[in-house]
Length: 469
Image (cartoon, rainbow, N blue to C red):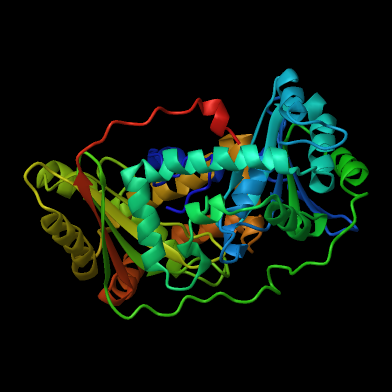
């Protein structure tokens, strides 16, 4: 449910695959998936290279271990603002030239900001990897920030906020819910920032963020594709190796930001222009801290797929098709994050149904799992789908790079990929009941309701290119 800006932020749903296909895929050892190479440059930059020679394409990503979780009050949104400013040029590569060079080479590039990290990527023909690496390493330390460009770009960010949050009732409800569900943890603040902070942000705020966090010893370089690992390491040494490390707090050294226990149900109603009501129920939940020792996050991930993700999942089958209490219903949970997670249930009431009836129906589905559990047949089918969702990420070099970068940027390791798959396969029906009973309780619940107001005339939408970065 936690969105990365510029990446689809809707609930993630696993693609359904036949169990037999999954078993075949798991039994084959593909060379393309067995060769991550890890290097550590003298300045602290970690490089991970995964060779995949199926097509002459390469993806290169630089991940900074700093996201909105690291922001302080008064400058929320600065991580995302700097992401925009990173395309404003250096002495060697003037404003706009970065994107033009990548496009001229037939590639694509963009960036993303999340609660936990900020990333930049290029995907292009392998022969252009030296150019992409030279461009990206240049702006790691040589970015030029001016008041003039900042004044223009902060307006773009504010418009992005209006279009994607303020003018989108469900997104606005989610934002308000997060601000209530978390009492003190930075996840309570939106990634894009509060409008008041954006209105009062200065170019010096972006410069301070850049100076503090954008350093090789706070970054991970991930390269996946038709490359030779030794040659990539040489390129990284030539381009990134000359950048000096900076004094900064590693993730391990940063102060712990522990969310205090919730002591009762929290409820919020948001009035906004919309056609239909909308309900979100969120339960505080753990994330993976030790991939080998933990089991609860894996059980929660399987539970998510029991409830949602395919046509026979419980929420769609029972609430939408059979009882017609909901027009749509879904579940969402992320087991990988630097901070505490939330297990979300969301739904739109069916015709003639109330939010109260809908909430009770969602509660009944959870209670049914606690009391009756899931059948072995259902568990086998769901586990196949969950595991397939992980396995088939490997079909795309971009997805492979994202998987590696996300794990590494949240305190886990790319080496945990196989461990995660094995742990998912071991989850039992009893463990699913245990996590449902433990975490789906009143004291950890936040309920957010969208009270639809008459639809006003929509504001004109800015061209997508204006909001690209």
